[in-house]
Each structure stands twice: as structure tokens, then as C-alpha cells.
Length: 382
Image (tube, rainbow, N blue to C red; front, side):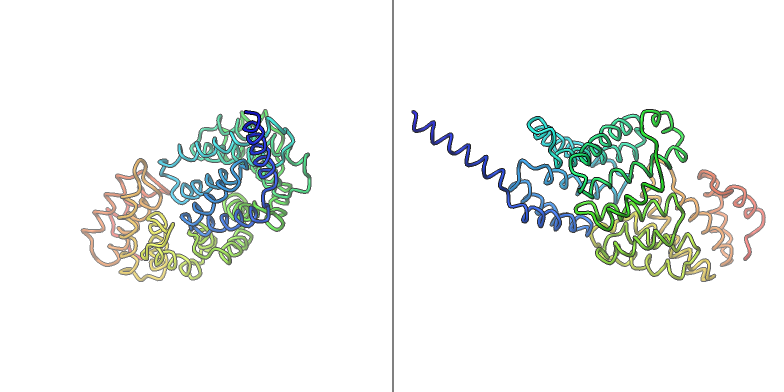
């Protein structure tokens, strides 16, 4: 009995020593490869990579966290589809559980604090997208506290500044754009947009695991909030240099030219997106195809090539009617109205009237009803 007990004890000790002496060079190599696969929209490869991470490093939260990030990117490519939300929340909860187990034994574990904070942060991001503001605020508050604690434990960890940067920027900007958030900000530290941008830029250049995510944030926030197309395009171009087949990166790159009304440049990107959609490349789904056909149609409309414009707008209309389940999108409203104008230009008055009447059945957008009623009385002429 004593021999069995001693052998069992040696087995436990050996396993403990093995767990504490992971090959961290291999771990980092696997994680970086897997992260690149996620951003490269190679989700199946990423799943296999992080299966290896979770198997070889079962007590470390990185494998679980990045498995959740695969699901996050699947959601991000089709945000109106909520079918993966529950899976994402469950995966993050698994990561949080691992982190909690580590913190129960070592409350200064930087990795545990970092990945738990990241899990709470990403959960909060999806809750905010789903406009569950109170729950999002709670996750943001708890996640931010862990990020600060992680930074105190290891100030050299540049990645934690992703959390700082996101918070400092959005805590300043979001309440001004979404008034429903304002009541919750009473419980949070004050935001600082300029400081947040600097922190995100530092991570984008010097980060270890969070470098790419920081670049993504800089691309999107400069587009959505700063209205700085040059800066947004700079980060989009950097991301596309490494990940030319990421449709989200391509979309933002193309949209920076649309915002400047430079369709000559925009259509280069949207035609490539359209071709990749038709080729069935991973991630290039019907939402990206709908957007590509819309902007290709706009380019032909501006060039007064009405036949080609109508052909692409009709493709966009079909896709919009399929995708717009609960509320008609701006793409559908504009497309239907523009088709009325285009058929008037082609002398096809019956088809034009049909589309003007359909415009009136959709919600009003940018005076679409007023102009549809006007063109029902008097045909549109260029």
C-alpha cells in the first residue's frame, strides 16, 4: 500500500512539475499561428491549432480564449445572425472558469487576470452590439478592473494597453453617440479619447498577442467616429498586407474611398470582394456580396451606364430581400429607389412606377418617399 501511495505521489508531483515547465516558446508559436489563422479567416485551421494548445496547455486559459475568438470572428462576419451568441458566451465562461481556478491559488497571475479581463471585455462587446447596455456595462467595469490589476502586476505587458485604449477612447466617445449609455458611465472612470488612441497605437506597433486587434480597432474607430479616412485606410492597408482575404478588412478599405466619393478607387476593392464572393471564398458571404453589388451599381450609376447599374442594383435588391429579416436596410431602400430612377432613364416607365411604389412601402430614408411621389407624377430625368 505504501509503495502504491509513493508511486501515486511521484506521479502527481511529476505532473505538477511538467505543468509548471511548459514549453512556452512552442506555446507562443502556436498561439501566434492560430491568431494569424483567425484573422486570415482560416477558421478550421485555427480550430485545429487551438485544439493543440488546449491539449498541451490544459491549465492555461489561452486555448479556451482564442477558441472563443474564432466564434467571435464568425459572428463579426454576419452580425445580424445571433445563432452563435450562446456558444460564444459559453466559451468565454469556460475561459473565465480556468482563470478563476488559477486566481484562487495565485491572485497575482498576470495571464489569468489578462485573459479573464479579455473574456469579460469581449462578452461586453457583444452585449453592447445586442444593446444589452446594463450587462455590457457590468462586464466592462469588471474587465477594466482586471486589466488595471494585470498592468500593476506587470507594467511591461504592452497587450494590457489594448484594454486601456479601448476603454479610454470609447468611454469618451460612446456616451455622446449613444445616450442610453450615459447613466451607466457614472460608475466608471472618465474617458480620454486622445490617450486611448495613443495606447491603441502602442499596442498596434508593439503588442504581443493583441497587436492585430489594436490595428482593427484603429481602422474601425477612425472610420466610424473620427471620420479620418486617411488614418482608417492606413490601418486597413497594414492589415490587408498580412490578410488580403479578410472581407471585413477589405470592406473598410473600400468604404474609406466611398466616404470620399472616390468610386474609381472604391470599386477596385468591391469588385475583388464580389469576385471572391462568387468564388465561395471563406468569409465572403451574402452580406459582403450585397454590399459589393450595391457599390458597383453606384459606380455605374454615377458614370451614367444605366444598364450596368440596374443589373448590379437588381442583384443587390435580391440579396437585400433575402437578408433583411426584421427591418429593411438602407441598401434595400436606396436600391429600390435608384432602380426606379434608372428605369425612368431607360424609358421603361412601367418598371420605374413599380419601384417608386415599392419605395413608398419601405420606411422613409433621406426623403425617399418625397422623391418617389415626385417621380410618380413626373418621370425622373438626368
